[in-house]
Length: 98
Image 1 (cartoon, rainbow, N blue to C red):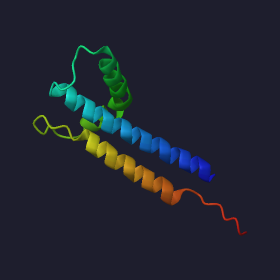
Image 2 (image 1 turned 90 degrees about the vertical axis):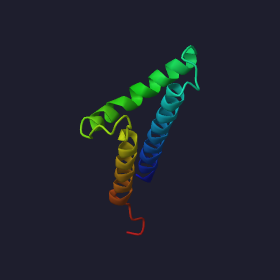
Image 3 (image 1 turned 90 degrees about the horizontal axis):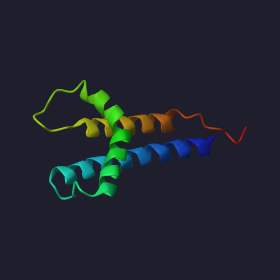
Image 4 (image 1 turned 180 degrees about the vertical axis):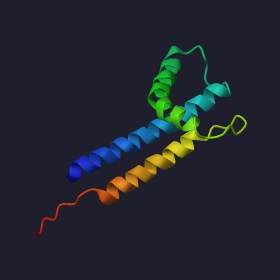
């Protein structure tokens, strides 16, 4: 049972890293540090966007416009950390000393 918990935690951590990568790559494209002509970078950005946009769009529906500042990744990461902590806290532990 604990191996399943560890797998779920690592999966959650990996998704959090994908969110960080999406934010960083989007900033680099926005500030023209990365070229819009590089097909590998465009495909990587598109893949990250497809993986992270559904929950981010859901959060964006409920937060007000802050004048061009998108805080939905921060809110999503906080929600993910909360879910991760709840998963760790309430996961059924097996007592080996029965």
